[in-house]
Image (cartoon, helix red, strand yellow):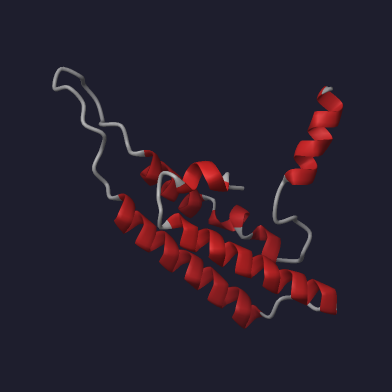
Amino acid sequence: MICRDRQTAFLPGLKIGVSCLVRMKAAVDTAQQSGHALLPAISTAFEERYRRILEAGEREAGTTGVPREQRWRGRKKQPNAKNLMDRCRNYQGEILAFMKGFTRPFTNTQAERDLRDVLE
């Protein structure tokens, strides 16, 4: 999942995406409490909204690289915001997996706690 505090500093428009994810979680929680799966139309609408937010974020992040001195070879380094947008686009299925079947948690907090217990 995305570390919200650290990543939103790179891209202020990502706050809209975070609020969309929170709305998705609320819809999943409501469906889970009622004992029904999330309606396909609602799931599709959320996925479409997620894609539109990513497209807007990519426009906001831009594609210009971090300037380098001319003596360096190779590609210019991408901005952190661009890297974040790429990860959100490439791992869209994993990020939104909590909506399908309710088997994956919204956060990995429990997994982190379990690891801490093992490592301590």
